[in-house]
Image 1 (cartoon, rainbow, N blue to C red):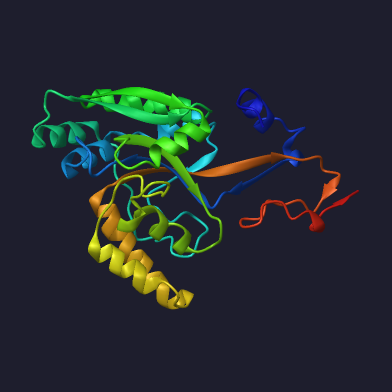
Image 2: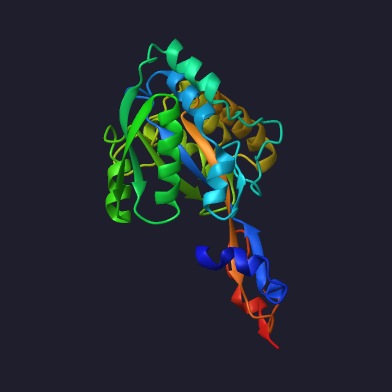
Length: 265
């Protein structure tokens, strides 16, 4: 549903039977390059995590999401209910910036995609970073160039991205996004994250059964979150507008549209 029509459709009794929603197995996030100033300083990354108002960002996408507090998304085995969210606290963020020796601020470039909702989110992040003294110029690129730029190590300090499952397992998230050897051309460790303990846990979790792997993935995730290479923003919710004559419609969490289950009344 187009953003301009979303609110009116959602408040329409007539169209209530047409609307279906499902949380996508994925996460949109703000990454910070842990090997590039000023985000090579953990205090700065922590400051950013407290500067981002996730509720405001959800408003910009018509509420089409659930606030994210971790990397492993809702609906995926390994999502950890014991992980707390980081508080939105600009005062604490400013104090952390001062502690990092950046009381007078710093400049950077925020990379984003030219398409909505990323452009709107980038503007909100820019405003929220400005409050704590980080002046971020927005660099918007079309998709192919955006992907090539952010997957080239050392080119980006901070940016917006998203990751969605190709298959329903935590191995499609943590090793791809955070293993040390994935900070390479064309790979997706966008934050340049390096942690030998995390690497060992992810290697250990590989190829074992689900029951054995989940504690390892959850332990690795907690170590990653403690280092703050990311600010997880939200888990997208997809809304479909479907004529009620189409029976048994659903948005499958893994396969998307499973057409053979549908029929027309």
